[in-house]
Each structure stands twice: as C-alpha cells, then as structure tokens.
Length: 353
Ligand code: GTQ
Image (cartoon, rainbow, N blue to C red):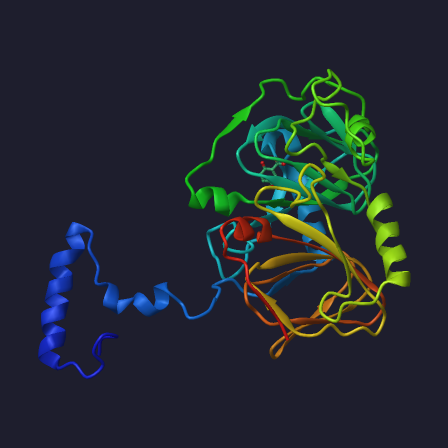
C-alpha cells in the first residue's frame, strides 16, 4: 500500500489514485509516495563501480582519430559514461570523464566555459594545453588545469599521438543551470608568455610582488601545471620515511598555493602510493572518485566485486561504496572527486573502517 499507510484499504487506494490523477496535470505529486527515496538514510548512488581498460578505450579512440579531426570535433573525446547513469555523460552524478586524443599536427580550437577541467596525461609527450595563451608542455602523468572562465586550446607539435583524461564538473554545472561557453574565434590563443612562465613565477613557493606588473595570473588560482616530474619524487620520498596510512597508503593532495585549498573550486585531486603487498583498510566517502592507475597492478575490492587493475586503467568508485585496494606490485594511483564542492556545501562525509 502507500508508504504513509501500509495497511490502507483498497478504497483509500482508489481515492488516492484519483487524487493523483487530478494533481498530475497541475504539476503536483504526493510526497508520501516518494519521501523515502528522496531523503535517503544514507547515499545509494545510481552510479556503478566500473573499470575502463585503457587498451580497449585507446583502440576505439585511435579509430575515431582516423575518421574525424580534432578541429572538426572541437574536442575528439570518448566520454566515459557510467553505465548506471545512461544518457547523462557522467562518470559520477557530479563529474564527467573522457579520454581525449590529439594527433601530430592537430589543434583543438580555443574556447572557454564555466566548467572546470583537469587533464591527466595518459600517453605521449610534448603536446600542449595553452591556458590564456601560455603553453603547458605535457608529459605522461602530468596534471594540467583549465579552470572555469580561462581560454584554453590544445595542440600537438610532436610526431606522436597524445592521449589524456579530461575530468570536468559538467554535471555539476548542469545541475545549477549555469553553463556559458564561447569560442575565441582564432583557432589558437596568441602566445602571451613562454612555456613555464607560471611555474617560474608562482610554482616555487614564490609569487610576483602583489600589485606589480609581473603578477599576471588570477590571484585565487595561479597554478595550472602539476608535473609528474615533481609529484612522483615527492611521493617516493614520503613513502621512504613516513608511516603508512592504513586507509590511503601514502597520499598527497594537489593544492592551490593561493589558499591551501583544492586545485579547482569543485574538484579535488590526489595521488597515492601503495607498496607491493599492501592492503588498504575498508573506507567509504561521499565523494565518488575516479582513479587512474599510473603504475603497478592490483585489485579493487567492493563488497563481493573484485576489479583487476592494470596500468592506465580508469576505475570509478561511487559515493559511499565501501572499498579497499590490494596492491600486488607497488601501485601509484591518481584520483579526483567532487570533495571540494561537497566540502563547501557541508556535505562531505567519510567513514574509515
Ligand atoms: O578540452 O575543453 O572532454 O570543453 C569536454 C569538454 C574536453 C576541453 C572535454 C571540453 C573539453
């Protein structure tokens, strides 16, 4: 019978059904039929744990490369859509993921939008993402940001294909009905400063004196290139000397030096090192997380599910799904989630078992 009255009579049911029929055309629904699925006792994500094998995605992406150019596509990307969220182009309810291919000589035209994006390089070396006319020359497992509102184009002046993961907050911006986007008009933004300029000025625990002409990056979010050549040795050095965390292994968050907060206003990202043989303790958190296997092999355990992980695989753990990692060899993982947004909205919770 109804949620409100499980012992309701057939007569009451008939009366309610005719009430609902009268309400529906007026845009009205009875809360008592759906309250328990609207206000859940705990998260029950419609998204599913899922793994994309890199080799399989790569084959299909390269096939796309034979058929459509980056310029024609604007962005030549295979969307990684969570099978539990059909039609939403979402990997979790709040986040998007895709794998983008840029072939030698290609350009992905300059645009800007209210969505925040991160790029995590999977393969290839030396192609660039230009942010407001400054090229970040990308190497495998570099993290490059294109924050909301900043012009960005991509290009590949090398002789090898380049593939990276795009992580965006597209579903979040859609939730708020706040999408604005525009094309620059020119295919590429004119170069404003040489590559590496921002890292030199803002990336070494220094910044140009406030108010001087050299202080050119947005004050709230100056950095946009977090190099594998920097984060990998830090993780390694920490793993040599620090006590290991039973839930995370050795983990470092990427931070915004302007405020010590998350890399983007909606998205947080981190890397972790799991030594060979390490088994993390079970944890659950409200931030559904997308992981990239940077190095090594192991297994992700979620209840009765076991997902084997190999280098460059992408795997998503939905909100509140209890999970743990088993590292067969030493593993390095990159992860991103909407923890930044949830923390601002006072929603984030975790439970470490
Ligand atoms: O490179 O700007 O995968 O705007 C989806 C939307 C990439 C990009 C995506 C985008 C981009």
